[in-house]
Image 1: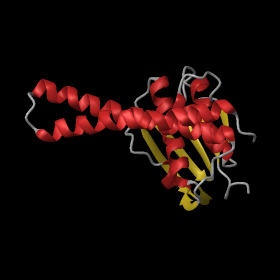
Image 2: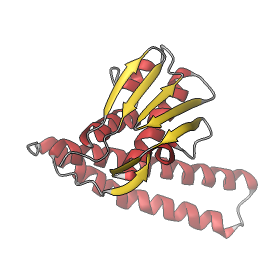
Image 3: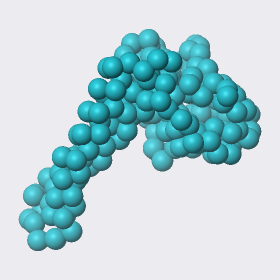
Image 4: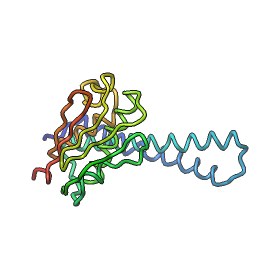
Length: 192
């Protein structure tokens, strides 16, 4: 894939935004560790710290999308198990079933599946979504009618879901929206 000037611009912007974000995060953590703030102000500092973490995660997603788009992404391959990759730290996303071994960029796949699950829960207005894992086929449900176009990327309203799709497809995977579900199929190993 040819390198696009816009993808390089986005990569540079992501890189340059990290310095001021690190400053905000650092000062928020310093203030929080001091332990001398009144409760209300300590709460505000905690909110700033959490928002800084969210911004860093969004910059990571955007930088990954730019590297994929420009053809400069080199996945870090490692052995993984599809059920383990589907397990998320997010209490709104569960995983069940039987996994299978894969060689993939496990960090990127784990993040992509978590983002798709989070997106389905948030945009679907449901408390829990579940990845049902059958070897290298993973089915996310429920994906409500409101969430389906956002989770599938048809309606671009969620950066995490959009980047997840690009990353999984770049690794040789496929995504297919079905009736109240999203099916992801992962290859045993990415295309060379």
